[in-house]
Length: 439
Image 1 (cartoon, one colour):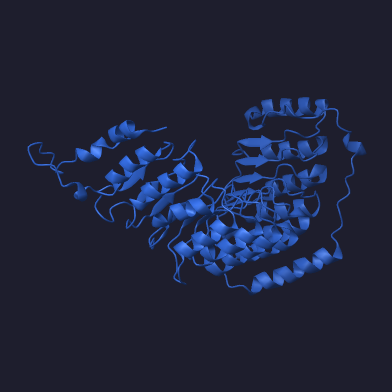
Image 2 (cartoon, rainbow, N blue to C red):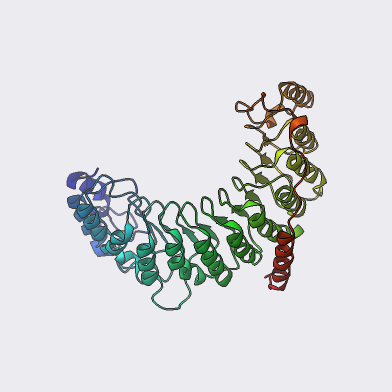
């Protein structure tokens, strides 16, 4: 919690700037000639008096010298009126600097806060990295951001856009979609925990399809995609040859929504650069869902981390994945982590997975916690792992339920694929094949 005196002390270095040759006898450089490339005020809460001191120093920087501004969490504990005044004072002092990176996260901005920060949103033609996480942004704030960053139909320089934990909902996602559609260089999109449902997911997926062909990392976790959103996202992913990380945790995809997404990822084949895939919490079954995951395992040459926690893969799905791990071509990069926490996996599935792990010498972690593996089976597997000096690969099993129903009583029949789902998959495959994919 900074006051006037402490802020003056922190900025004193800007008053002591001398010529670059270090000659102490030389007169100090005029304050307007001070060049500052990277400013970080994050984690320091400014009051109004402190902000006035900071702004006075920042306004004397050489015009257009600043490139990185980290202004996250700079109004914590301040009343709203004072907080907005602080944001306005500090950002107004930075007007005219064409930034490469701007972080305004954790400031509870809302639309009022965005207006207060208008100076750093306008005329940012070179902005490559924008962080607006945990800011309470809703649809009105999203519309304002787009109007400031995108006053016309010009293309943006954005490469990284992080929006984690806001209040966008569908209306906000639709309002923000033009920002993505006008970002042909976008590589990293963190579009997670935004309370977005199917409609907003479809809108943002279409914006990705229109916008970039350079996406490397996509985090869509904790939003609702569903079947319709999954189909739209699959079309966007099919156009991204450089994808390295895809996080779709807790998106309510179910098998029907996950199938087109996983098929689009698998279709890249040996040319795939996918390193990490997280499909946790999507109600994937041991039938369709497991087989689709298996296709990605067998086809993706660079895949190293697979997380499919909190699904319903059961023994049937575990066996399917174990076989896929064994069938992975030897020239592919090896999987180093497989996490299947809480998947209703019993003894048969655990044995299959551990045996596959033993044939994969570079696997470093297998997580089977939260399942229903019998005590007898656990003892056998532990002994086998110790004999092979691989005990360290198995994650702790403190949540394993040894009293779960025996595997003989479990339902092991695979679900038959509904005719409608088959027809949908065929139609989606046809549409994906028609899309031109950049080499």
